[in-house]
Length: 113
Ligand code: HEC
Image 1: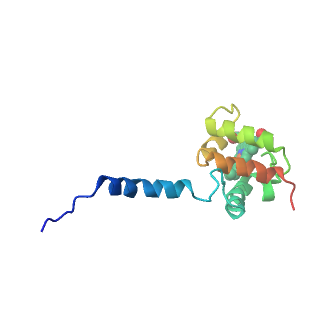
Image 2: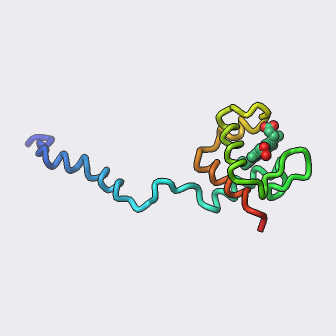
Image 3: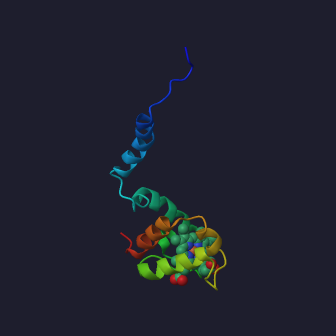
């Protein structure tokens, strides 16, 4: 008895394409960013330097309530290494993806609850 059965090409094609078809039909929206819980954890790490809840009391800029677009442009410039004034922020932002950076800008642009 042969060890392997020859697969019919049509069956093989079906076996190869089915997982991709299932992925394409997935209900998850492609642009889904981090969840609110995720972003509150990430944003919590910023408090060490930018003050509790992003409201600074020292020389480091306040983030809370600053315009979303300003925050987004600054964070993107840090990540890209094009912010001339950057010291620590370039290294920090390299660790975040675009969706997380967008979510951080949105998060801090909102007024404190
Ligand atoms: C180790 C301290 C430190 C941490 C942690 C930190 N920052 Fe910063 N941040 C700075 C400093 C210092 C600056 C001024 C620019 C520089 O020196 O890199 C800055 C500048 C910024 C600016 C520019 C503000 C403006 O109006 O120009 C933004 C936006 C920012 N940080 C966001 C964040 C976010 C979001 C996090 C958390 C993911 C974070 N920072 C964590 C120290 C920190």
